[in-house]
Image (cartoon, rainbow, N blue to C red):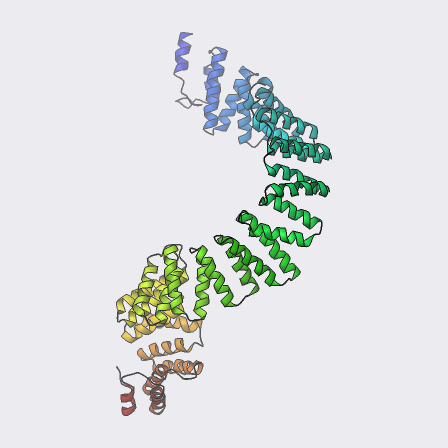
Length: 579
């Protein structure tokens, strides 16, 4: 026996020996063990193999364990786990049922058995398992909860009440359990007991009107309006601002078709500062929907909104809903503007409303107003690029190029991977234009490159970048490619056609340039043709040998107040002069 024990101690803790011994060999070599030691050893090996996902080896070891001890509940439990990995629910159920039968006091087995019964839709068996589980452990609230659901599914109302009683014995009666009882009695068509359960709950909380109101609302739903009214009236007498009491009385008036009283109660709730914003919002949605459906005069609802906002001067939600309604019915800009300002006084960090106000001011070309709104917004929403954008554009419109550039540069500092690509692209595009005007060509071209990285099809940037490059006489190939994108995208845009024609001219492709400058002149929608386009036309025609037509275009350009320094000299010499 001693020699055998030494051999067993040296057996590797795997299902295979060091020399590749199979499971069968390992079993055969250890037959000299006492039976209980052989069982313990192979059961532990099975556990390890199952944990290592070596399912076939684990199964063979477990079968061997069953040969040693057919009544080992732990083996049947582990076989359940094995069958679960094989998605064999029927055998898994048989195994866990056997384990629970052998060890009925083991709650883990019972719980797993009950879960298997439920997944196999064997609800009666699941109920029996959970009842045993609860009998083993009277503190198992989860078992009671699942029993309640199973009995409800079976429509076994008597056992539902029995289960609720056990819950109350353990945790005491509360609102949730009482309401559950009420629902059970209602399903049993026993309104008397349902009402009694609610009255008992209210009696347990004599100083909480909400429980009395629950009784009143139940009476309303069960056609006992007069009794309900007495409860609602008494509650409002004790607490006139009780929102639940007001809502209950409103429902009563509606049910009794007392419209004026219902509207008065609704208005009282909406104006009261005691009514929470969420309740007000829900009530207002209801009022708005009813008003729109009945096509009532919007003035009535607007007057109600004004009362609400006046009575609740710090409630931004109500002011926001009023503005949304104004937008929906299309009130004049002046009225909505006043409402937006009032809302921003309450909620200065409301970016969407501020942007809406800025856009309204944009139509009026109120550049100073836009700048003031944007500057204030940057204190509350420093991460919102739109405010830097509008501020920069407003300064740009005022010819305040340095201030515009500073605003755009501050906005650029807020760029991140989630930024709106259109805003970012326009930021860089306008910055490029301003930098070019200031004679900073290198910085301007860098800004244009950044613009196109964010939005490669920004046509205005492509056009301006291409034209500015052509003025340097450098990178004309790149300039032509960019300009061609704009012409392809908008083939009737006179500005884009003029730029493309000029780049072709700079490449000495005069015949092609004439085709596109003619199209630019034909599609120019201004009543007065651009002096710059006319001068370009003259230059192109001159280099194509048509000096008579060139002179005509140059003279038109001069008449249209051209600022070109060389135009007068071209006319005097009647030829193109390269600047």
